Each structure stands twice: as C-alpha cells, then as structure tokens.
Image 1: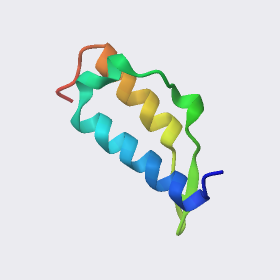
Image 2: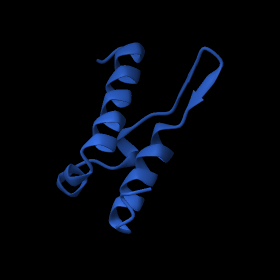
Image 3: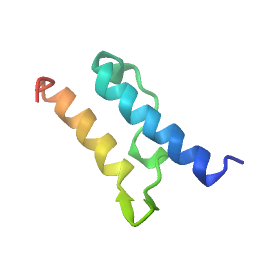
Image 4: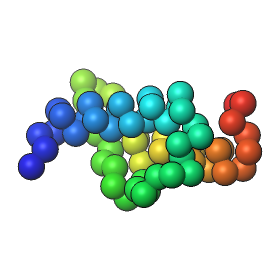
Length: 65
C-alpha cells in the first residue's frame, strides 16, 4: 500500500510530466478515476480535475494554452 505522502508526490509528478510531455497523453492507460484529491497544509489539490483538463485541452488540440 502506498502511503498518503508518497501518493501525493507521485500524482504531482504525473501532472508535471504530462504538462511537459503532452504527446504522451494519447498513450495513457489511466484516467482521472485513478487519482485522488488531497488537502495539504490548508491547500486543496484537485488532481482529478487537473488531470481531466490536461487531457481535454490536449484532445481539443489547444496544447499551446
């Protein structure tokens, strides 16, 4: 079982990677259901929404935004 802190860091890395390597989005075998949202240090990290928007923008061919 992955610890909460490790899962947070993994998901943060996934989002960062996808922002830099948008061409890999088409090869993904996961969707936003694999991610969890976190509340850390009073901040809310909505990984599901962020992931979904990255994929949506890519698929709509608006990668430059």
